[in-house]
Picture 1 (cartoon, rainbow, N blue to C red):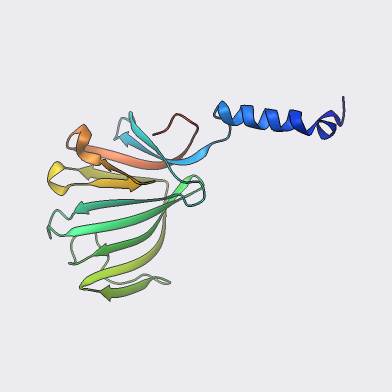
Picture 2 (cartoon, one colour):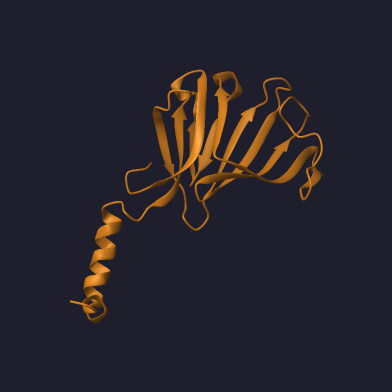
Length: 160
């Protein structure tokens, strides 16, 4: 019946609601996998209107806190910023083109726009690595001292 859905908006609404209940309408999530085997450890649902998360840790060399901020951008992760107090391996030493760099209360604040398909990191309890999203904090070392991979994914109602 051509045009039937246009004449029955309640039917269209019911199908959209049912699709959402079945997970077909997905929200942005960040997945945490064991690396390199890819076993899923956790999936964290993000606020669809502001799909942001942060990773904090103690730098392994400088032993000072580092705060990194990210945004899910479709199928990619965009690192939007990093804040730290001492230069160390793996931390920026100067801004890239288009970045902003400032010193606020003795901490370097760098605004970034770096895109990644996957972020691999080695986590260790001594560095207190944590992921914060949607009002929750997740200890990334809870699965042991290991390599993990973070990546964007779509999730339905089953994510935490």
